[in-house]
Length: 185
Image 1 (tube, rainbow, N blue to C red):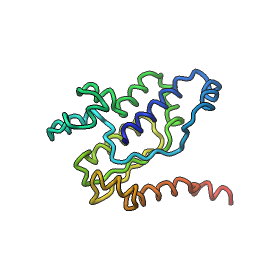
Image 2: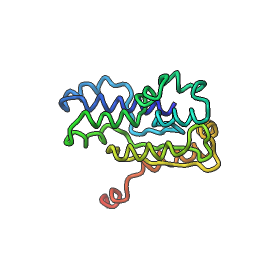
Image 3: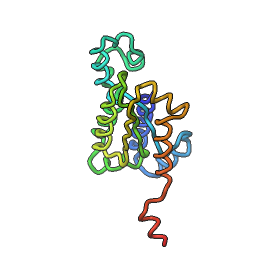
Image 4: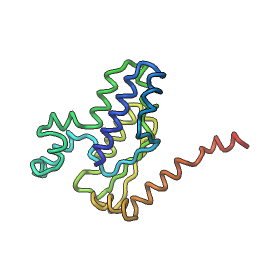
């Protein structure tokens, strides 16, 4: 789920950064059906290669749905990692172009349950660190106490700590910054 959504976002960045001019980007943007200003990831294994090793350590790598989604080896897991793909994009552009990445990545919130035994919550902190170092302007993290992998999703869908956290973040993002309010006075 979350890693697939983030791969889509990273591919969007690659596509937009590959345009040679702002005019060609605007022409393409007219045909883009999905445009958004926020991304929320829930309990995602964003560094898929690390997750492969985590699953292998638990002896479940052969049963994991990640195997079918990401490949059958550590190398394929690495290739299908959103964190790796974002780093790879940065190698494709020169230093002057790299600053553009923040124009194409919406603000992000990565949410994870502390008690998650399916995907360790450290996966979220590692991913946020990578995205921030890659130039993502806003990548916030939220860790939900006493919450496991499935609980995080259920609390989002049915109401609970996850939904409350995400909604509070979205509402906060819609509020004008204090300096913007003061400048209008």
